[in-house]
Length: 333
Image 1 (cartoon, rainbow, N blue to C red):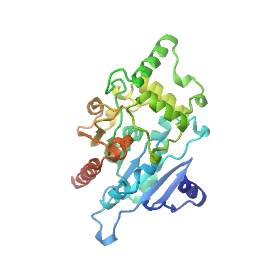
Image 2 (image 1 turned 180 degrees about the vertical axis):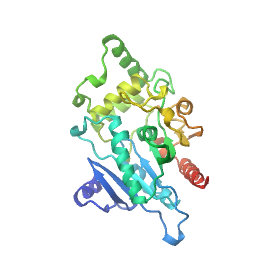
Image 3 (image 1 turned 30 degrees about the vertical axis):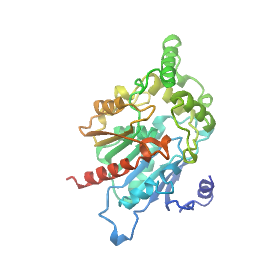
């Protein structure tokens, strides 16, 4: 929180907390900003420049999780592997942001931020690394953007099929079926409710996470302090993801979306935590079935026991795998 306050007050180059990697804020608008982390090491010792990599977090996760101390910094690892690394900071949404929908993020805000990355890096093609809902945003962006803009997608713990549960009759499945029942009986859609009524502050997220994921979901540590979910995003999750299961049908989670997931034709690496309570193995299979890409690699890993709530993001094996995969993409003609 202190670091966020310092950035709001002074802008530009951040004031990192002890042990955190230095970064520069290269763009900021509407509460959203882009961080740049330079490759580690002296310029002469750095490897051949790689395709810039952009980390796309979920809307509600505190992005400190990407740069933990004590050898748990994904940012430090990727910088050491020679990547020009960028990270989207969605900020701390307030009630003023309740009118934002998922499409406002993947079709407006994310394209703007990525265009700033292109200007800063001097490279058109970017690789995207999306975790959880950030993976959904990255995937949908790839569907609505020109194919040459994205070199590859890395998706971690990204749920594609909301109708399949890793364990039967979980609370989330019951809520999903209840939402469908309301739709059939009363024609009620969450988008018909006032968006302010659907605003989900961080304290309510903690209660909802326990209700939806069950007691098997480990409690979040300090780096996973939740940010608010805008009301419009909550409405989209209920309508398009839970009730319509749009992604599993190859549709984008937006009304009257012209693009489809079949328009995603870039290479994809899908990694999920084998013990994740919401992202089942079916998600990787469903992803391969609905996208237009002929290259979808699916892998399962086990999360870091020190940060079990973070799943595939903090699994050290996934770090080397995704870095090697992206470097191999660069080497292809």
